[in-house]
Length: 434
Image (tube, rainbow, N blue to C red; front, side):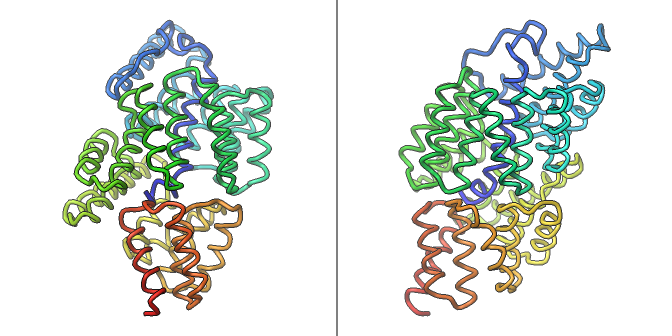
C-alpha cells in the first residue's frame, strides 16, 4: 500500500534497530541476566511480556549494582524495543534516561543513536553513531546506526560506505538487510532480493527469520508478485506467529486480492494491538475505498492523536504527516510539514513529499523539480511514479504523465487502496483526451 511503500525506511529502521540490538548484545542470556533464548513461536502479547521480564531483570540487577553501565545500556535498548513492540512512544523517555546513566561508553552511544533514529532525529543519530565508532571502531552495530541515519539524511555515498564497513565487520542478517535496502533505493531489485536472501540464510533467530521474510515479501508485493509476497509472509509467520509486520503484509495481500472483509478484519485487530501511524492510515484508506467513510474518519482521528502522542515524546515525523495531509487535500498543512522536514534533511523520501505537497497547492512547476530529486537514485517506487504522473498531467505534459502513471501501476497496481484507483482513473482520462 502507498503509505507503507513511502515509509518503508521507517519500518526498516524500527526493525533493524532491534536486530542491531540483538546482535550487539551477544547471547540472549547476556541481556536478561540468564533469560533463555527465544526459540519457539511467540505471540505478540507473549513477546511484550518477555520484554517486560527482561526490563524487570535488568532493573533488579541495577538495584544491586547501580554502577553497571553495561546493564544501563541494555535497559535503554530494551525500552526502545518495548516502544517498537507496543507502539507506545512513552518508553522513549525511559530509554533516554537509562542510556544517560550508561555514561560515556560506546554501547551507550549505540543505544542513543538507535533511539534517535526511532525518534526520526537523524542528525542526532548520525552524531551518536560517530561517537560510538570512535569508542568502538570495530562495532558493526555502530556502523548500522550510522547507515540508517545517513540514508534518511540523504547522504547516499556516506550510507553506502557505512553499509560496506558493516558488511566487512560482520556479514550477518542486519548488515545484509541494510545492503538490500541500499540496492532497492538504487533500482537494483535483483540485487536487493539477493542480499535479503543472504540475510535470511544468515538469520539465527525466529525474529531475524520473520524480519527477512517480511522484507522479501515487501520486495515481491512492491513489484506486483502477490503470490510470492503471500508465501514469504506466511513463512515468516510460521517462524514467529502474530508478528505485526507480517500480519500487515498478509492483510495487504488480502486487500489486493479483493477480499476486503478479511483484510479489514485483519487491520482492525492490528491497529487495536499496535496503533502505529502506518497501520492506521492503511486501515483508514482501505475503509474509505470500501465505502466506509465514517469509520475511515475515526481512524484518521486516531492517527492524528497517535501522531501527537509520538511528537510529545520527541518522535516527530513531519514526513508522514505531510503525506497524509496531502492525500487528504489539506495543502497548507502538507506544505508546512514537508518544508519543516526538508529543512532538516534532503533525502529522496522528503523530496517526494515536497513534490506532492506543492502539487496539492497548485505549484506544479516547483513540484516537478522536487520530483526530479525524488527519482534521482533510481528507486522503482510506485508512489513516486504516481505523484510524478499527476504533477506532469497538471503541467499538460500528457505523454510523460501517461508514462509515469503506467509505470506506477506496472510496478504495483495495489500501492494504495485509494491512490491506485485515482492513478487508473487519471490514466484513462489522459488516454481519452478528456
